[in-house]
Structures are given as structure tokens and as C-alpha cells.
Amino acid sequence: MLVSLKPANLRVKTCLQQAGLEFEISILPVAVRTARLAADALGCEVGQIANSLIFRDQASDQAVLVMCAGDRRVDLQKVQFETGIELGKADADFVRQQTGFAIGGVPPVAHTQSLRTLLDDSILRHAEIWAAAGTPESVFRMNPAQLQQITGGEWLDIAQA
Image (cartoon, rainbow, N blue to C red; front, top):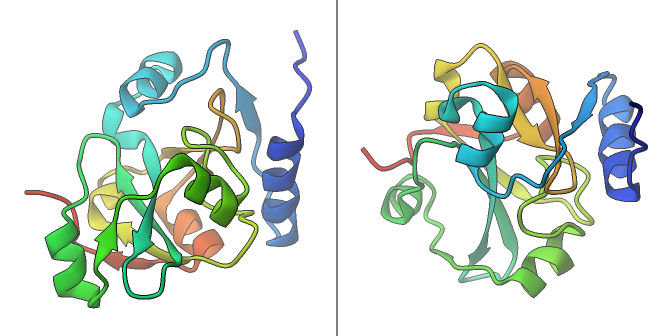
């Protein structure tokens, strides 16, 4: 059964193509708003889910994208120590305004504005990772080097021990 891509998925696909990369966007039968649900649906380890987390930079009021393996949690004190940025919680309206996507479907790319991106080293444990593709039921597969290439993100140790 062929499922058509939604406009949010097409934005992600176009952005990836413009970066010279071809990824297949997979549409899952149900929304997967957590790393555990995504891993169960894909038959992979929770750590292979690259969570796209949007935080608010307290000083600039700009969004910061932090990507972390699904089996880890971001340590905001480590982020501040490593980058000098004090991050705060971002509500659903802020996330949609800053990225153009809803929580649960935020991809690593194709945001409405350029975002500073921090990549947690925990992702590097896996040769193959999955990220959201614009909607809560869509994902695409890549490797950590491709994630860094498409986001321009900086690798740091920012997950809780």
C-alpha cells in the first residue's frame, strides 16, 4: 500500500534533496511520539532513535535543536557547561513557530529558520539511526555522519550519565 507524503514530509524530503542526499521517508501505521514507540514500530533499539528536541535559549529567546539518542536524556547543566547556553523548556506554540513542525514530528532539518544544533555523542554508538520526518508517524534512516552533514550540528557530551 502506497501512502502519500504530507506537506511536512515533502518539506523534509526537498531539504534533504537540496543537500544532495536521498533518503526514503517511511510512514508508520500509527503516530510514534516517543522513542520507545518509534523503536517498537521500527524493530530497532531505542538508542537508534535520534530525538529532535527543541529548547529555548534563555538569553536570545531563539530555538536550539538538541539531538540525543532515544535511550538518553539531555543534561541541561552539561549543555550550559559545554556551550555557555542556558536552555529552557519550549512549549508547543514556540516549537511550531520556530521550526514549522509540531512536537513529536520535528525533523533534524527543514525548519522555518536556521537553528543552532547540538548533537549528543550517544548517537555515535549506532551505525544506523532514525529521525522524525516532519510528522509523528514519519521517519527516515541515516547514519550519524549524515546527521551531522545535514544539520551542521556540533558533537558534544551532553546526555545524562
